[in-house]
Length: 382
Image (cartoon, rainbow, N blue to C red; front, side, top):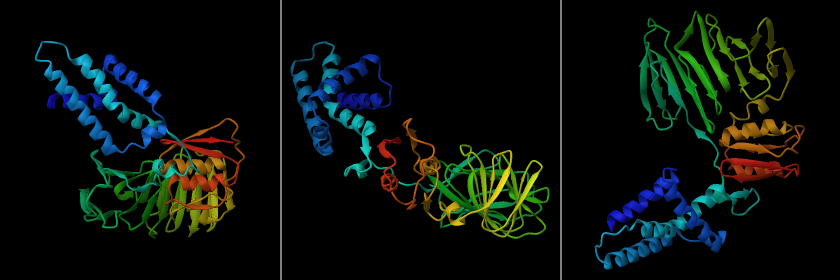
């Protein structure tokens, strides 16, 4: 009987992993459909997990006693076992499918149980030899040593590079990358700090120096606090431009799904270069580079570094730009109804520490759109 229970458990695991045969899958799904037709969603959802287990175990034991009571005739018991297996797991499957496919209105009182949590501090470090270190689970302390540079994780969770041997080769490169729903910070060998937003990466020599310049390559979004060093200009490369500084604070947004690379200067000065075009920025200015021209304008810098300060600035922001910010942070997919205009504007500020439904509620309050959450997807309608 113990082996039979294990077979049933294995069958359930195989089904959920998509590894059952057509016959096994059909038996389970047919029984599920028949039973679910007799059970309301509330009936299924309100059953306590412990009670389900109790009922399933007792029923299984009853069945096996009956089968064993019929003797040890050489018969094929699998049709009967499958038939009952389906009836035992039907509630489990029902809960599984309902939770996976359930659509939740953001104003639903029960939405919190199916909500999406905000992103967290986390990243992956790829060393020069190709080794990947998940920094989220790594313990504080020394992580690696390359080309005379020691790499450690601080007790606060940031990555720290320290040059121990200045005569070592600087040819080795590292990449720090964040997924959707992650953010991280790194202190480079010169003391400069870089904060990475979600779905971003920073590549650099372990010693930071390349041909007498401090050079990093950015994909996504990063906030830079560059340590002053007149002898070694600091260069940030993106797909469309280079930013050159000596020592300053600035933000670069260079996501592939944005129409232009934005560079926002908080203090100091920076030179933005794209092809033969150059623009100098003063504090409070932002450049927008679409690959053809670089336009400079005065902006509210706090709005551009909202993510670093733990907020979403939605005040007057194009709705679909705001939703791309939200999608990266909560690691969700956004699906628009055709009627959703590109001219909608959002409003207000919202903390990135809030759950997804709380953020969407604040946007929905404008009455311009309506949200439904289905798993990791957001459906937007008029």
